[in-house]
Image (cartoon, rainbow, N blue to C red; front, top):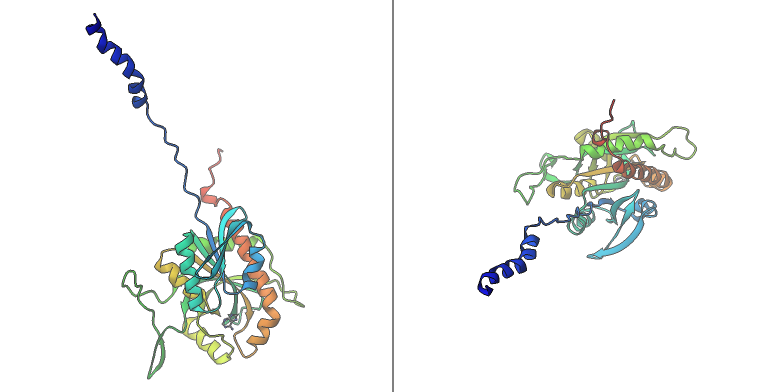
Length: 292
Ligand code: ADE
């Protein structure tokens, strides 16, 4: 009798185990946290008014460059001041991409206007950016030419295209917020698309201004945008450069920057903040269809 019952007893003992292993396991998959939006500017006054609105702030320093993380308009962001010039901009952008893996990068600040249609206080949203001082100097003078992407060995394009989705969002953002007119002016500043060129020089010469305008069909000139563009292009991260016009890159540029910096920054900041808010809105295509 006992010999007959022993297997049954074992079966009864093992039954709960069998039931547990047969039950399908429910794995709770938590989605990865959303990647932040990177926001960079060359100088503290260009970024500070944005940083003031960041909540849940933390501070991290990499190679001596301070990064501020937190939330802006409800979205995770990481902010840094790069310093002026292409090398500083490339260093900070590389650190940003490596340590924070941002989904997109926005570079904001001021620029010199090259297009006569632009007024001080207007904001240029770059369609594409290029380095105006990268190339070869031969008997025929300066010839721009891009370098190779060290990751692929292929030549980089002459212009780095800004992300079309960010450009579209900037257009929608422009409709959300009025810009500040220059002191003593009743003209409402405009947000316009344009080509931005970048070089390691502050341009304060009508002659150089004209050559950048004709050589690159450029609308504005600054000192960081295309360096950020090159790093982002090579690392396949969408980016956008937007700039408030502070001067006309002519002989009056230095004094114009002093008097117009406040309004130019106010307007680049206003568009950047409005763009961040816009990026948090569901786009018309991603909204659920409504029943008719
Ligand atoms: N940023 C603002 N104005 C500029 C200029 N004229 N040249 C280069 N960078 C600038």
